[in-house]
Length: 384
Ligand code: FAD
Ligand code: UDP
Image (cartoon, rainbow, N blue to C red; front, side, top):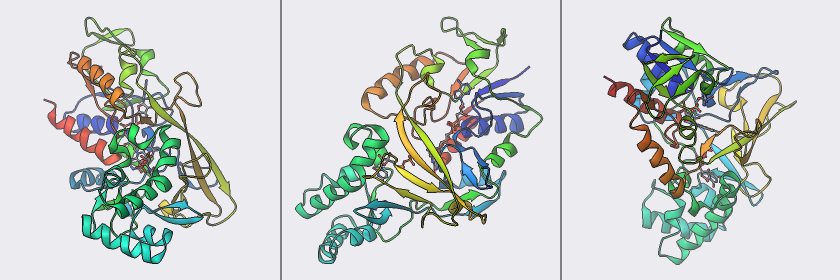
């Protein structure tokens, strides 16, 4: 009945479903174990009429025109430039740490001389990952690097990952580099905007096609069988000879054959408050205080005018497969040891010609939304 079965209705699955249905006239079945489409980008109105992101704040940003143009078929956009403050030593300062943060936190004469040194050493406008800044062979810059490391990174990373910054891939803290500039925005991408009617609507528009069927509340393991020896597949007890596109956990697909890969989970605590505004910016990070990492106030994102406001606090927690409160694998954990295990899975997957792995969980990559849309479009273009 179906040419392609897609596991997962996040961006990876939705882009491929849309492309294969509209450009190749394929009949597609999308399966997701959740009760909604959209994966982790899913948003909805809460009981108070505030548009919330159920799985944490999602801010779209990209330099990739193809991705922006592609998504623009399914939504109009509301311009939005994300800014984040971090609560440090009783003050709220811009993150990524920049020259404004420097001047807020350190005495004027010291900040002035460090600013000149930074510009002299790296150049104005340059972004320097904290782990690189710590390696600089200059006493004053080393002092600054240690200061930023201690105040911004070490405790936040301990909460978020249960690890030191050095013990995870440098790519992770490199996402938030020290920015030698006065630009307080979290991202500098050319296209920064929010879907005007929310993310869920984007997914509805992508999947609303006569060739696409969606099966929710269904774990693929309950309807799909994969024989590792023969590489044959079964869907609902019948042989399936089409293509499987899988966007879930790679270790789960292969029954943890090479051992389980580790993930990090989060608990989101939503609160509705009877005030118009709770905080100045959308997100405030708390590197050194409390057990949560950050608080996001949703009204800032969509500039909604409604009475009251809704915030969410993010509490990082261990991922536990069999615990319904901890079994969402929000982040793969990026360490050298896990990379070795992942490579064994990826090599094993090569022998399954009818299976394509794509997505943050299936490829175990720290993909942002634009990255995964670009990746899914590339996978589609590579298909014959
Ligand atoms: P997902 O969205 O995770 O979709 C995978 C789907 O597969 C899920 O719906 C899941 O239910 C389904 N699935 C898994 N296993 C099974 C199974 N066994 N059976 C059936 N279905 C299954 N990106 C940005 O660009 N900007 C941001 O601001 C941003 N903020 C983020 C904040 C948080 C807290 C997190 C966790 C991520 C954030 N991201 C952000 C990243 C963004 O969420 C991902 O890039 C995107 O969701 C990846 O899409 P995907 O399709 O690969 O995975
Ligand atoms: N980070 C930090 N302090 C901050 C912000 C980020 O230490 O105030 C580190 C932390 O390790 C985090 C990583 O940088 O996991 C990436 O941050 P980002 O905001 O990109 O994380 P995400 O939004 O993907 O959770």
